[in-house]
Image (tube, rainbow, N blue to C red; front, side):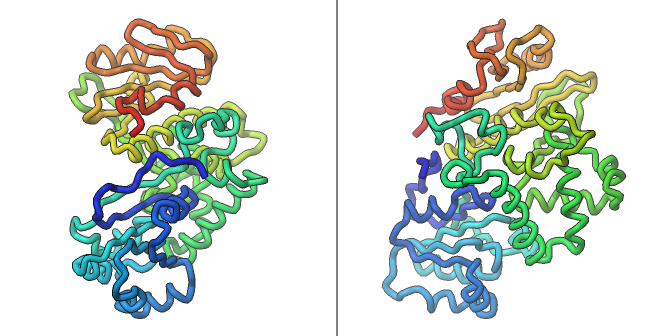
Amino acid sequence: MYQRLLKPPESAQSYFLFGPRGSGKTIWVKSFYPNALYFDLLQSGLYNDLLARPEQLEQLIPPAFDDWIVIDEIQRIPQLLNEVHRLIEKNKRFILTGSSARSLRRQGANLLGGRARMEKMHPLTAVELGGAFDLAKAVQYGLMPVIWSRADDPKQYLDGYIEVYLQQEVAQEGIVRQLGDFARFLKIATLSQGQPIYISNISREVALPRDRISGYFQIVEDLLIAIQIPPFTRRAQRRLVMHPKFYFFDVGLYRALRPKGPLDTHEEIDGPVLETLVLQNIRAINDSLHLEYEIYFWRTANGLEVDFILYGPNGLHAIEIKRSRSLSRKDLNGLRAFKEEYPEASCWIVYGGEEKQYLDAITAIPFVEFLSSLPLWIGSPIR
């Protein structure tokens, strides 16, 4: 097991731990809390019992038990949170893990009224992999822990991962009525990877109503398998593109879903890959080390762009991604325009070369060096 950057909270306060399936939540919890009482709601017998009688939870806890109580996949029984809330008042301590916030949000579940904090688990990062990090493997198969620990066939694992989500998260929970339409949407959505979302265009592509497409985008976010990045508009002086950008959360998942055929070029498929890899490392570092950055992108109406803007207590950072091994002046246009508008910003261009370069107020840095030292670049040493 690789050492994760996320550390258990120092306080005895109960907390939620959310993250996509396969991101390592269960292994992490069991490694830090070996004496915890563990309830897995994926076990059908336990699930059926607690679904029928949530109050039975208290009867499953020994009266004198004073260690942590873990409930895995809490989103499967949102009403169980009322019992958890009541037991917290009796000085019980809970860790509530989940791979989806959708059912909790839709059913107006009791989120414990501030009595539990929120933590997030992501796939692995280059920092956590250390010397084992391999850029070629990461851009091909992503950073899911199983890929790096025991998967003999990474492609087979990723194909199975998609099937598990469709069968267990979407079909069993009744999230969508037409599973075939949703599966088709997932593939079409990969064409928007790293691009602003234009709902009307996608609606025409998949021949489904606009409101259903909007709902599907919300579903994949609720299932924690995709995110939308909003535009950075603070103190804006230029006309900006206002549609959010879309990303599946992991490179491997994106590749597994992306349609491939005679009309799909390698350039089209590989284009968003390095951008996605950088983003998923940024999100994991940000959440694991509690850096509190908000993540944006910046694109002007006339085509100037910066892939990622990080804004928070540790500063303002502008990060552009380029696959090429060498850089031209044109590659720096977006960062230079952003720097003119926001002189406070630290500007980085992450590229496929081998040498670190200093280009006016912009630092060019190779991919592996940037990813492997990311906490230092964005303002916080590893704790």
